[in-house]
Amino acid sequence: MDTKKILEGLSDMGCDEKEINFMKKMYEEGDTDTLLRDLRKCRCHLMDELHDSQKKVDNMDFLIRQIQKEK
Image (cartoon, rainbow, N blue to C red; front, side):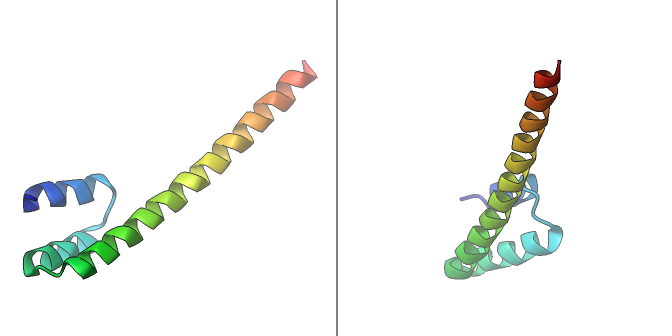
C-alpha cells in the first residue's frame, strides 16, 4: 500500500500527528505487528466515540418522543 494513502487515511480518521508519525515509522520499518496493534487501538477509540454518539442520539430521540406525547 502507498505510504501517502496510509497517512491520508490516518489523518482523515482523526489520528493526531504523533500517532501518524509513529505508524508511518512502523510501516516503513516493516513492523506490521506494532502497526496493526496501533491501528486496532485507534479503531477501538473510534468505536467508543461512535457508541457515545449513538447514546446521545437515542437520548435525543427519547426527548423528542416525550415532548410529542405532551402535545
